[in-house]
Image (cartoon, rainbow, N blue to C red):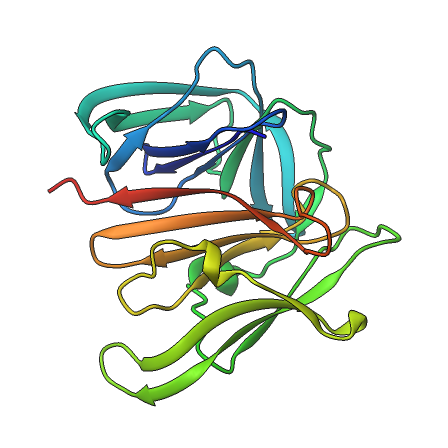
Length: 248
């Protein structure tokens, strides 16, 4: 499988791609910092583009046209891939929550129903906190899981001090079977906390997909987990990550 993630922030872009076999995904998000660490984008691929848009009745995925242009060059972290600033635009006037490029055909449908507070506030999960993640699609096999932050708090300050922090996805209907997601996140952030950036059902399979983020004052990393790519006895699979940093 080849998974590629693209992050756009106010028209700026970062991409990190992973090699594989058949499926291709590219995710563009209009949130984050303002400089691309690296750019690995195969422009020869003929991708189908979809946007996730917020409305008063929920969030919907719909097909869009996307144009990408690079307007300055820079140095990548590994000195091999392209880096710099990028701009992009779609054929829609409204701003998307994020965009998805794939070699597959996605179903245009309602993907989630988040309120305005969730869209405008970070949701860092502290040890002991839980969040239900679910799909609103009325499929016979639809799932709801609990995202649990566990760990031992040892002190307080600008950043909380804790040991053995982990983010675990659990299914209480299946004897609380769980999966540790934090081990797949390479950048732990300034305070070591993980933000539930978004969840919903991108691939219309009845199980939630997750976009998790970690950040510092100079670095933000986004990690995508898809249910349709999950291994046996797992809920989701970490399919790619992308990093942004400041331009100074």
